[in-house]
Structure formats: structure tokens, C-alpha cells
Image (cartoon, rainbow, N blue to C red; front, side, top):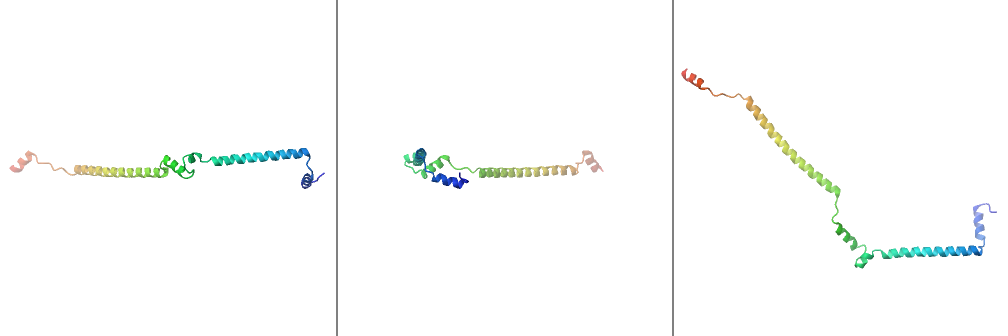
Length: 138
């Protein structure tokens, strides 16, 4: 009996295959080769069929096909830039409106001050007719 793996391996290699073992290994080899060949053929078929639509129209798969796709999509939209532009526009509008509000507030303040100044100034009353007569008769 072999004591370790190395001895077992050596024994298996030295052992002569029996006829049934030989047939089984040949069948397995044949089956494996056939499966590999089938796989290889399918892979090659897929490679050959790539880009068939473009080739039918006389176009190269990589070149003009991609250009047509870009044209149909239209221009790319940069959403970050679009959002930044919108925000800048909103800020400018807010700044304009706050300037207008400030100017209106200043006008209202001036009007209030003028009204208050009018109230504070003593009104010089015109002399009544009796006072006018007194000054002449006097």
C-alpha cells in the first residue's frame, strides 16, 4: 500500500490501463475535443456576425455607425451647467428686484420726512380781517 500522495501518483502512472479504461478515456477525449471545437465555432460565428446591419448598408461598424447614433440623439445636455446658469439668472433677477425695492423704500422715507417737516414747521396764519382793521385804525 502506498503511504503518501506521491507514491499513489507514481503507482497510477505506472499502472497499465485496461481495455475498458482505455475506451472510456478515448471517448472522454473525443467528447471534450468535440465540445471545444463547437464552442470555438460558435465564438467565431458571433465574431463574424458582429456589425452585420452596418455592413449591409455599406458602412463600417465602428466609424459612421456611431456618428449616426450621435446625430439622432441630439446635443448632449450638461445638467450641472444648466442648473448653474438657471441659478445665476435667478440671482440676477433677485438682485434687480432688491435694488428696486431699496429705491422705493428710499422714496417712501423721503416722503415721510417731508410730511413730518411740514407738520413741525409753524404755519404762519394770515391775519384775519379784524386784525387788519385794528392795525389801520390804530
